[in-house]
Image 1 (cartoon, rainbow, N blue to C red):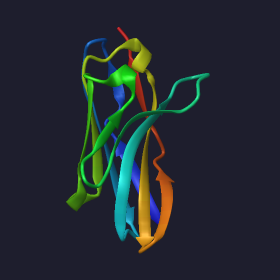
Image 2 (image 1 turned 60 degrees about the vertical axis):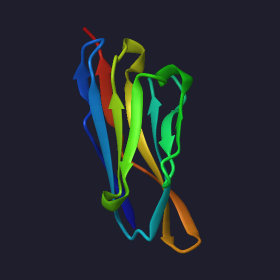
Image 3 (image 1 turned 90 degrees about the vertical axis):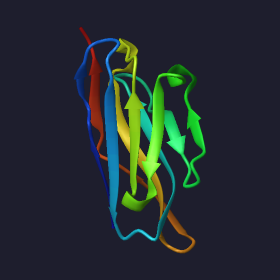
Image 4 (image 1 turned 90 degrees about the horizontal axis):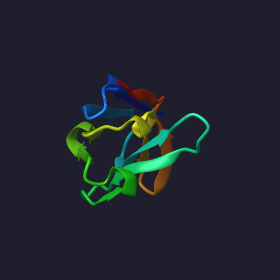
Length: 120
């Protein structure tokens, strides 16, 4: 079994910053893509940013230039640095990882979610 544990959410004023972390643990052979998704009330879950094991990144247009995704492969951890936060960034943020528990046995795992609220 694999667990993803997120941390770093909270309440921040518009223009502020937060850093989210997500650590994977358990029966891990390797981790391919890791990413962050978010879901606001009444809306579908959407991709925020993703990063491959080689460091290639992909961002939603709405966060380009404000958010930065990174990872520490040795720690099986992915980070999301969020700057210049806006009220529309308010959502529950979820971590996702494509984990190989054995060679060629790839599964998707999700974290429990962490609330980010941007409000004055």
